[in-house]
Amino acid sequence: MAPEYAIEGIYSVKSDVFSFGVLLLEITTGRKNFLGFNCRFPTLLAHAWQSWNEGKGGEVVGPILLKDSCRADQFLRYIHIGLLCVQEDANSRPTMSSVVLMLKTETISLPKPERPAFFTGRSANMQDQIAANSCTTNGLTISDDLPR
Image 1 (spheres, rainbow, N blue to C red):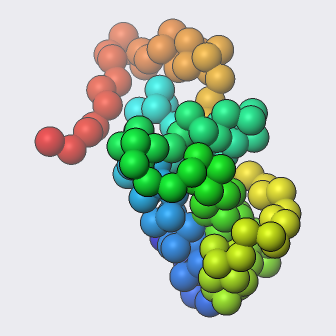
Image 2 (image 1 turned 180 degrees about the vertical axis):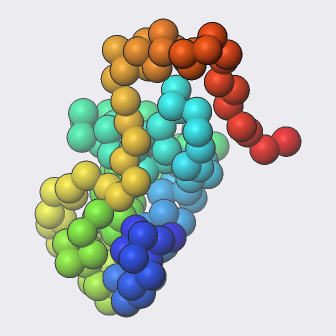
């Protein structure tokens, strides 16, 4: 769900672009996008963006897809397009017609995506702080609520 809709209830044509970007990233990586309470595992959007930004976008591609599908550089392009679609600012996202053109034409150069919406990546130090502060003042521990 696009952040502008989830937070403010504002829906636009760019909301559909956001949803398409999530779907494209899910298909390309073979992972579901999950915004959970467990801070050790970043969302798909955060993981894809961090990997792509560090030049490790190929590591995000689902291993099953690499066996007998398209070339690895095509998958990197799909991840790049997906990241352009899930940018936090709706005005920075491309239109759906632009996305279709980007998918069809490999010669079009793509702009660098900005940080995606719902980015929840945390550093190892932050995780250690959370673990160290997992007790309340009365000494009770806090449990993670996860669906069964």
